[in-house]
Length: 96
Length: 397
Image 1 (cartoon, rainbow over the protein chains, first blue to last red):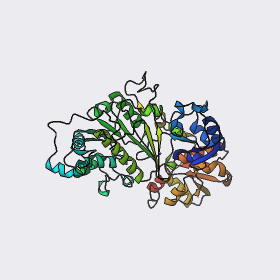
Image 2: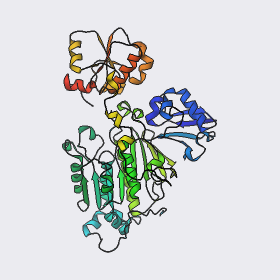
Image 3: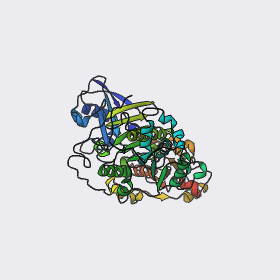
Image 4: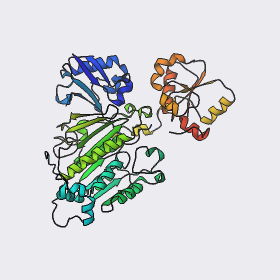
């Protein structure tokens, strides 16, 4: 199924600066693995070393959190929008 | 007239004692003539007590609109002083405020805006030691801070005290807004159980914020706060509002209370405030860790050697838009492109890498050392130090 994955601003640098990517996938897990095989740098930002989704990153299918659906086995259908939503803390400065 | 969810917060029994003076009636007339606020709502506003954490980008519109609306008591918590880089978005402050404590300038501005309300000022950093004490006198807490440790601290303190936390955060041109800690609603930890490890937080190369963004997000926080107080409308509880200023799009995601949440779940494991710097993994970062393996060169040494005519390749690893602000004639290869463009570098030449502060160029230098480059050093303190020590005509940013 063709699905759209929305890339949040903080992670766009690791995804060819695109705000969304069209992928073929039947589940959320497939969509994310297609995404990280296309953009290898994204992988460590989305997943821990043992392959779990990081706890400051949430994934939604349309407006539902996959933690309350079937997690990475959540099916996606044509036209679904998968959103990656990381925590952001900013209010003023993000200087290093 | 949609009166969907009445939130049982900050709705003191508005009866005797409290009334509006003739002057207040005139001031709030545009509220009083609309039925959703009216006299009843305005008296609720007058009796409400709201604590704003931070008086910066988010705190500015928030403070202005809460004060203008007649929130009877507004607390401000901040420890910072106004600097020039704040003025691009922190509209509570003017140029003449630079160098003043934010809290002092903010309170002065808000008292001038509305002398009929009480402004409490707390010139302090919010800590695990003072948070519960500061929060206890207020009905609603509004989080306008800029870092993960304080966000988790505000969340946990609100959950422990049962107070709603009107949350807003921003990054570049994107914002997130919701209300955490409302009765029956989710908290910040339901959404994000843990903060990102420091290494995965975007660096200054990707930082920055569109000046108007905190204005929009802070104003939405103000609207939600006022709605909670007057008990009207549909509050942003259990909904995460995402705003993208570039695409000019609002999206909404469902937020659920997590029964396994460590603070507000069925079996909480966090029952008092903790050390949030440690929780966010910042303790280790404070120690000067990485640049031990990379030799450093000071701006003065580099200047002397360049003046002497030494063959040095100055490598600037900042972003192109930063190069446009100022540069010292280095060859620009942004840190993110270094791996794919490493063949542009001549490993037989001496290379000095620099960025804004020295942090990204330390990473670049480490990468190059691993890639087999031997004659590499990092400009200590980056172009900021160059401006301080060598050439003050180079602007700082």
